[in-house]
Structure formats: structure tokens, C-alpha cells
Image (cartoon, rainbow, N blue to C red; front, top):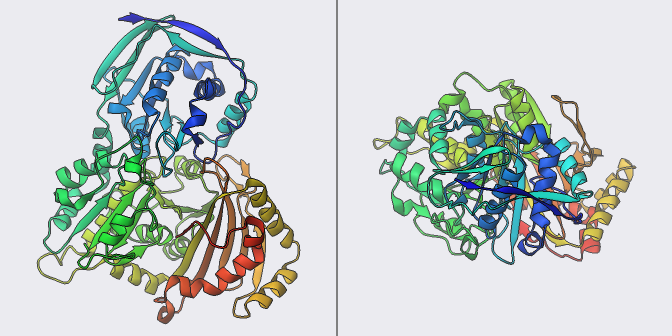
Length: 583
């Protein structure tokens, strides 16, 4: 058993260590500066206070992107020096973000220990590699992201930090081999437990879904399936779940060999722009396959996001969460006794609101950031939730969960087709979505992302939009001058959220223009990029008339798009004539 001592290292504050909606994300070059990671980790330990750190159990893992292996060794040594009792690491340092949440909530160590929190090393859907992005975030004992009270404290600590603690004489731990390494330090024994990355998560999924009925669907000759992990950490789970447990053919897995350090040079973001190979395979895009599968799905780098596709058909994330909520009780055993409530992020379309009203469910609209859903779930107020940025989940964990969403869709398809798998006509993804629109109406929806915009210009644009809100009548006059066929604005505000559980207030969460016909324009600065600012513009139009729910989305939204771009003076402020990404 190696012995270590604690080394106190003098340091000074480094600017810009403010965690965004999902932790601290910067370029690798920033994280590899002397003391940069160390300062942030120590500031986190200090924010948690010594009594919560000493003797605790911490999970440290992530999506395996470039710099992860070095970062894990640094955090292990700092945890030891700060009095942590044991660190759990997924084999090879790999755990999807949802699996980290599951491990914190479900796993029991050989000695009966339970995790108190986790450092997750990921920049989610952002590219990886020496010149790309790295990220770190802290999750609490409920398995969910640290609340603002903690992240604000971490940021304050980064501005005043003078020293950090690191173990001297503690060798690097071999994280490729499963097993426990024991060490001894000033506070007594310290263990590092390297465990299988997928078993806890797979066990949890099997307790939620009816794997037998999904297997019947997947192995039916009438059904075909394709799953694209975009070379992210989801690949570590895909083979185990879809092939070994559910009987899918290995050929149905696409890019499921994790190429962690740089995701095979790709952008691990499951949308129509970046998941090009899957999009083509599903019969969409510029070079579509002629014989696409019935169902396709993709994941991002850390496997918490998902994209759902049918044959030549894209399901918007806003529709996806509404459809899961509408079908959950009949299709998913975990929800058989009913839903406690549903929630969506403010920019997400109001499709879920209509389902909640129809099913008489509690409904919540929260700021962007999964931690807001976590509070509702911990209080027993919410079962299913989602956000437009390809995040969907439920109260089984406290993170969004990409593979869970895929299994939810497969469960709905299995339920709808339980009598059709012996030669009947298959109910398709497109059928399910169109039936949903016929029942609840359709929310035409698109998102325009303007990435790496000059931060000053982005702030000016937002200030301009806030100023306009002082006179709704002037806004309506301007809109009528742009398009006479667009409804009047009924109200406009800057979204503010009072948490019904802890009473905390989150301000400046996005600028909203709400129209008399239920349409919406929302403008938000995103907190997930690593440099510059990203302006997100959300455009939504509600259509109840079932004879008008089959229009092309961009065509249906064209008038509102024109209004949004001219009202905001997007090109004048940003110099951009077109968005970086349209979803």
C-alpha cells in the first residue's frame, strides 16, 4: 500500500472560471495552463465545505475526450489530499453523463459505500481533441448538476483562491483495469475503485422498460433499426443494450466504436447538420439511402442527448418529449401507475403543455439547465421532462438521458405494434407523430443558432430586444410593416423563474415575444459554448386545424422567421446573413 503526503501549492485566481448551464467548458489549451484545473477543483471542494468532502465517496469519469485521462489522475490526487475516502472511476475513465447520475444514485460499493457526488469530465456535444473543447462539472448526491447556489460559490472561490492541496507520492492509478487500489495518507485509507462502465446503467434500464417486448420488435423481420453514437461514449453502451440484450444486428450500429479523444474528428452533436451519416441512412439529407430503416437514433459525445428519426422523417425534440409523455403510461412499465407531472425548458415548444392540459397533469416551464428539472423530481412533482436541444429524460436519474429516450420510443413502437409483428401493417414513427398532431395540434418549430458571435454585439442585440418590449403597440406596428399576415404580439418579457421547491429566483433566462395565436419568438444567449457567444433564436407557430398540420415546417414558419430577423436586427448587430445551424 503506497503512502502519500499532502502538498499545499500556492496559486492565484485565474479569470473566467464561471460555470455555465453545464459546468465549466473551455478550449483544451485553457485547461492545460498551469493551475487551471487545480484551481477549479479546489474551489469546488471549498464550496462543498470540509465536512462534506472528508470521508466522502466521489465518482470521477466522463466521455473520454482529449485531456480526460490526465484530468482524472489530477482529480484523484486532489481528492486524496482533501480527505475524500474513495474515488470510483468507470473503466478507462468512461461513463456517460446519465450513467454517472445512475451510479451516484444506485451503485453500492463492496464495502457498502454510496457516492456523495461526482466530477463529470465532458463538454457534451462540443468537439474534442487538442485544439477543441474540454469541460468539467460537479454533480450532487442526488445525481444531478450542482444548483446555482453551489456553482455561484465555486465561481466566487475561483476569484479569491490562494492555495490548493494535492497528494504527493500517490502514483497514477491504472484506470484500464477493473479493481480496487488502496493507499494510505494523513487521513487514513484512500481507495480508487475502477469498475465496469455499463453494468449499473444497463441494470437500471432493464428495471424501467419491458426489454422482452422491445426485443420482439427489434428482431421482427418487419422492423429495421439504426443507432449512431457519433464515436462518443454511447458506443460503450450501445452494443451491450441493443445487440446483446435486445437482439439487434451489429450492422445496425453506426460509429459505435468510441474514438474518445476527438470523436473520430467529428462533431458529436446529434442533429440534422452533424449526424450526416445517420441522416442519409434514414433517407433524408442531400444523398439519401433508397431503402432506409424504420427507426434511427443518434447520441452526443457524453450520451445525454438524442435525436429520433423515422423512415425519411425527423422528430423534433419538442414533439418527442410530448409524444413520450402522451404514451408513457401504456408503453413503459416504470410509469404504469401514472405520471407525477411533466416539465420543459422555456425555449422548448409548447407541445408538452397541450398534452399536460389534456391529461390533467402538473406542468412546469423552467429555465434551460437540467438542474431545474432535478429539483422538481426530488420533490416528486415531475416524471418526464425535456428540452428542445435534444435532451429528454425522466425521474429515474437527474440528467437527460439519450439511450433512455431511444428505449422510450422503441417501447412506444413495440406497444403500438404488439399485434402487427406477424405480417400486419407496421405503425411507423411518422404515423405516431402525425396521429399526435391530429389529436393535440402541431407546433411548427425551428431554432437558428448563431455561433461564436462577438460577445459585445450579442449583448447589444439582446439589450435592443429588451428595450423594444417597453411598447408592445410599437412592436406590433413594426411587425405589420414587415409582414401583415403575422398575428399581433400579446405580451413580451424577459423570462424569470421562481422555483416552486426552494423559492430561488432565476432572472434573465431569455427574451420572449408571445403572439395572440399562440406563436412565440424566443431569443437566448447560450451558456454551453467555449468561446464567443451563441445566440439562439426559437420560432414557433401553433396549428390546431388538422388539415394544416402537414405543411413543410420552414415554409409554415417563413413569415415569423422574417419578423424575427428584422425585429432583432440580427444582421446589423452580428454581421451574419445566415445562422450557423438551423434545426
